[in-house]
Image (cartoon, rainbow, N blue to C red):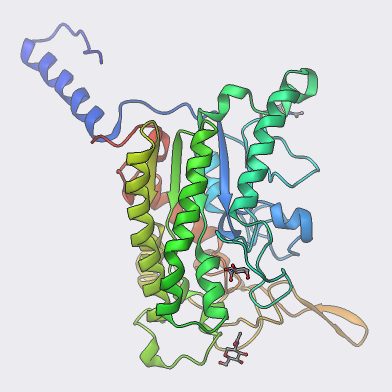
Length: 389
Ligand SMILES: *[C@@H]1O[C@H](CO)[C@@H](O)[C@H](O)[C@H]1NC(C)=O
Ligand SMILES: *[C@@H]1O[C@H](CO)[C@@H](O)[C@H](O)[C@H]1NC(C)=O
Ligand SMILES: *[C@@H]1O[C@H](CO)[C@@H](O)[C@H](O)[C@H]1NC(C)=O
């Protein structure tokens, strides 16, 4: 710590020093020099993983920003894109994407439909879960780390495509996963209590993976909790919920309670991990509260539509699980778009009944970036500093 040596009366010098000390203890003194981002997750942060293996989500996905399909289940960018941008990095390449990827600033292991625990279903069964669950994402990361090291030493183009060995401990490890583990129970018609009963198994696995990453040199972790899944059209259309099941925002009360239960347990897991991993800085980010505040008070934040899908087909929520966003149908021998987008996605919270619009993602990012919803309350750019306890 340094005090500014100014030619001013003594009292002012003391004031400047104290202010620096205070800001250090509250939020850490320096901006972290994150060399890379390694992301684990589901469609909330998939920048092309599932698309690389199973095909691109078609237009109008990507219409608001990339102007072509860009591997994202969104009209534009996701929270992870805004995180990369804020750190001054390019958008994160999906690990599975063989064409045009550049992993200098990290890699994205997330795929749409991923779960913490492996599911016993295929992508094409009800729910549509990805086979690339969290354990597989970790295996991919581990292999990526080992081979990056080997190939970097060969020089040439490899040094322009891969991170350096020491970047792995100076990276930010981001996590946004768990939503699909909860919905898999809902799709199997489990009660809220039945789903809650397996949450400890989910978090035991989640904890293992954080520890494996730590053992591989990971030190800075940025963990999103799960969002209000009961506010999403694909859940609202699952059963004929009566208004008694819904809150004033139009969300399923019991499903959101399960999400909040998961989040409380996740937070307790993070507290435990801080004790077990003494060199780790682990930031828990309450994305749930931010998303719920947007859905319950849209007008205050410049939005008009909340639970209805911007892009979809018919029904109360403009959501039909058989005719998704971008779906086409043959009419008189001609292909016509039936999963159509709304006119102005910038005032809609929900994109396709499952995912948020770019406008909503951007808004959520703006709320969480300064640490207001984090424990400890560290801004994104300072998330390498350990919890002061
Ligand atoms: C999948 O099947 C295995 C073996 O039957 C079981 O142990 C596991 O709990 C199942 N997973 C889920 C998510 O149902
Ligand atoms: C990959 O990205 C880095 C950082 O933006 C850049 O320096 C490098 O030249 C890129 N590699 C290739 C092969 O374009
Ligand atoms: C869940 O219940 C619905 C009726 O609400 C039924 O149509 C569906 O087959 C059930 N699914 C499972 C997996 O039991």
